[in-house]
Image (cartoon, rainbow, N blue to C red; front, side):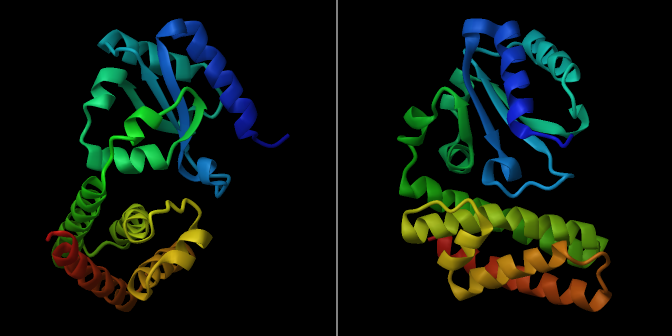
Length: 224
């Protein structure tokens, strides 16, 4: 019998309610399972927000996860409500739009996010990618680091598409259709890297150059 994310989430939610009861403010699902793009090796990326979060709650949450199947695949975000509501809104943009609610709603938080917050999310994203790309080209020369950079770039691409169109596209197929040519090329590279078992030095250099050039342009564009 194969793995069912719906069955797993039902058990997860029951455990949360048993342990935290009325203190549970929001539960959600992120990542590839939320987008309908999960594979057998995909992480189970869950979100749990309590009315407040103590160190003891973190320990209890970890112990709760230990009782569930597929524990090694579980990751995600745990927080108190006050901390989340006070979070940097440029971070909250991606968080809110990439989270599928299971219990509760993020609409009150989402309503506070402005176009300026989206611009800052783009700028921070490309600055971080640029920094790590330069570091990798100069020092590590690692194919795995480059794969990680292109994977991370997908989040920035979604922010760029939202900034340009006013719509958030979770699925890669939809995202590709609404990106401009330069951004399409970055997403194409990300998909291509996922199909390559090993990267030759030539591929590593070519894809690194494209990433660096693309980041440089957007640092200027979004930094205004």
